[in-house]
Amino acid sequence: MDETRSVRVTRADVREALMWALERDRAALLAHRAAVHSNKSDLTRRRADKALVEQWRAREPDAGQGSAPGE
Image (cartoon, rainbow, N blue to C red; front, side):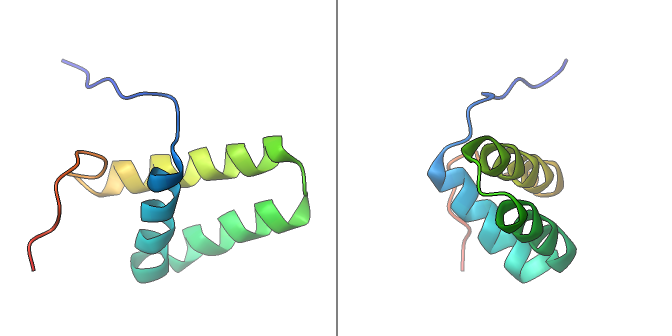
């Protein structure tokens, strides 16, 4: 059975994905930064944000599930 997720990307999702990329995937972070800074349009930013969040969700099994990591 396929898991369905909302196609809407929230600011919180983007922030979490950016923090994940900063800690674990520098290439994803740099790709997002390059896309956002190379073109100032809102559409480009939304696409870059969505791509980064999708990468984060694919690599973190509990990403976006609302569970706080235990420390």
